[in-house]
Structures are given as C-alpha cells and as structure tokens.
Length: 305
Image (cartoon, rainbow, N blue to C red):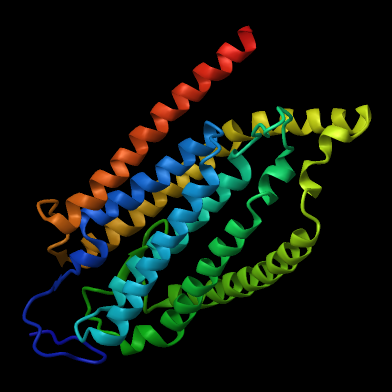
C-alpha cells in the first residue's frame, strides 16, 4: 500500500485522491474558462466594459488565491498537485486577461466624441492595472514558495507527481528547477512593474485630464493618432491566435494534471457550488456577445447618419 509523502494525514489505500470541488470543481473550472473567453471577446469587440470585467476577474482570482492559501494552512489532506492546479488557474488566466486588455482593447470613444489612442486606452484605467498586478504579485509569491518549499511540505504520492508543460512532466524532477527559475523571474518582473505602475498612478493623479488633451493637438499629432488607430484595428486579429493558444494550453494543463493525478470528485455539475459559477460565467459570455452586437449596430447607425 502506497503512503503519501510529506506531512501525512493518515492511510492512503488507492492510487488517487479525492479532489476539492469547492476549489477547482467542474463548475468552477468551466466558469474560469468561460470568464477568460468572455474577456477576450470583449476586448475583440472593444467594449467599454472591458476594464471593469478585467478588474472583476482579478478579484475572482484573488478569492481563489485566498482559498488555496487557506487550504495550504488549514487542510491536512491538501496535495501539492492541487496547489499547482490553482496556480495554473490564477496566473495563466490573469496573464491572458491582461494581454487581452493591452492588445485588444483598441479604441474607445470619449464623451466628446474623440477617440483615445491605444496608449491612452491602456493607461486610462491605471488603478485597475495596479489592482491586477497586485494580485499577480500575490499569486506568484505563493508560487515561489510552492516550488521551493511547498512541494516538500504538502502531500504527494507517486501518482500525484505529474503535470502538463507541452508534455507530461514530473513536478519533482528536472521541471522543478525550471519552475523555480520561472517563478522567481515572474515575481521580480511583476513586482518591479507594480512599483512602476504605482509611481505612474501617483503622478497621474496629479495631472488629471492629461489623457484627454488629444482633441486640442495640432493636425500632425492627430495624424499620429490615426496611425495608432490603424494599429489598434489590426492588432486584435494578429494576437488572437496566440491568446487563444494560451487559453487552450491552460485548459490542457489543468485537465490533464487532474486526470494524470487521478483526482476524483471534481467532474460533477450537479451541486449548488458548481452550477452557480458555471451559469454566471455562461450568462456573462452571452451578455458580452449580445452587447457587442448591439454596440456594433449602434456604430453602423451612427456611420450611416
């Protein structure tokens, strides 16, 4: 009979573990996948609600982080591979969401009918960026702890040692060395970027209205804004395949990790805790598509006038 290594909670009589459906059950997983897809579509359609959706996504990811920290500290039967599933969830979806916003948000009309350039569109919701990168730093700090210390302290068995990184990898083998380097690199980069954003946010607050001065610029500056508009219009379809590939890889990584680790009890939608996040996320996706069609129809009507 195989015994779990690490901080053992008791006997282990089968090659497999009972999953935590309140952390990564089927409804929650589908909800995160649909939420990420919704944000990509919202960015493609250049909806004004995209920054708000991103901020809500960051709050949701922070809630998942709180859950995994609670499980790490309080649950005696929490396995290292389960923590890895949660980290993949959080960091990958946040990365997709942030990339989708920076590259897909495009241009949005201001109240006076002018348009903001891509750079302006990026930094207008600056405090939202600060929020999202604060969550990224928090999640990656946990990831650094996980790869350096947590894998040895949390439970693991011979059949809960594998994850997906373009192939089946042993998380306790050579892949762990790469993961340590990668997690430290991301933490340093995200921390420096967060500090930079905070500094910019402080300066931006002292210069309110600086983003909305393009309307008063000379014709030459407006032409440069037009070039930015063309770039913003082309960029979505150039980056969509890459972001879509990352989303697919995230799904593969999570689902294959769960399958290879023989995690039971996380494939059922027939519970309140699973059906609610699924329905909410599915409704958000439908609402985003409907709103996009309405905004496109309104835009066509304005052009005809």
